[in-house]
Length: 104
Image (cartoon, rainbow, N blue to C red; front, side):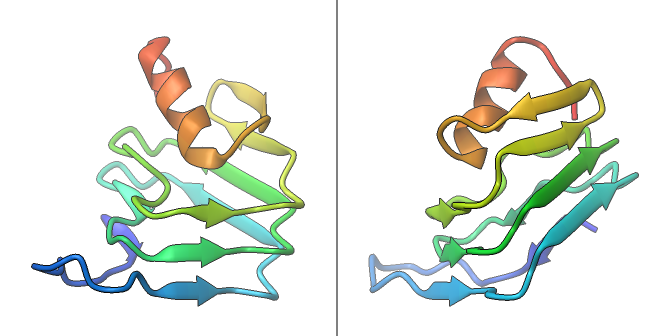
């Protein structure tokens, strides 16, 4: 599995879709060696109740989403290398840790 939400690439800069998942609380992503991200399209995601995110053994992940993602309740991500505190947003954390040489 490479992505969870698959969308077709748009050829123009049309309005970005907003996708809301209001009941999603835990999300565990594990043992997915070819997993690249939750969504690689430009959609914006609102995950207002996401409290727990686990990303383990997902070495190919590059971003959580290419669009904006809102996770106001998410404070910590459980990863292959330990717990990471989310200070800004998921994509920034992934990028920072990958630049530091960590694999998810």
